[in-house]
Length: 286
Image (tube, rainbow, N blue to C red; front, side, top):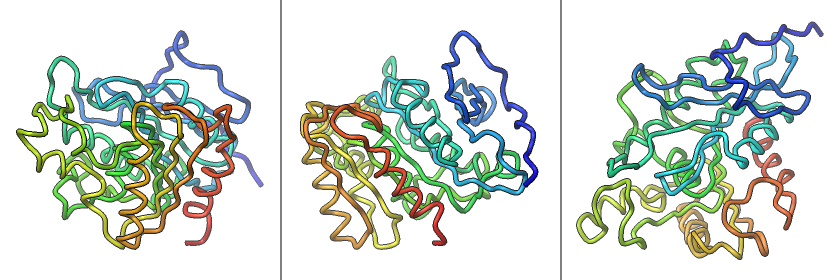
């Protein structure tokens, strides 16, 4: 089968900050996916040498950091992006608005994530992706945002009006790595600009457990027993709520794993589980 030439990068590289990629992965750094004036960018991880007629599934990657820190090119995100690209996926790791210096960033941070899904659809032909086969994965605060991308839709009032307002924000499946599912257990979260006691409905509406119904896509949850940042009980609660709503899901508890692990923690190689999940819902004929 004829092979395509390497895709033309959508952004110029910054050699000093670009990590070394394994053979088989094309890396495109700092791609603009938000409207003009926004500084946050995305990194793309693509399988090399795809035939011209190939349309790969895509996965949005959302970093953690308490909604106020972190970045798209941390070790976990590089690990996830390269793993995905080596197995036939296009990965898109994004920076999004952070709650620094007292900024109120909810729901703009979620809007940024949903805009990234739309951007993938908008650029499906250029990136050789199937716009109907898009998933999402995130860790910690990124796990929360990934879950919110999966379980909220236009009826929840949390989809951005623009850009690309004619395109869907829907994903076919999600992987939540140790993200909080019920934010009402925290007295204060910086991104809201208000304490729980001042705005309990705000905290409730920003919680994935508040938006579940049987039409939500499948969700894989992973959490370590040694997590001292987000209690394991959060993922157990999420799994129980998904079961009650009739949503297909799986909870994988990683014995001895702390907070912020990637797909290859020393406790267990999680790549077969995560890739198997994405293969089932993004590659199989579903």
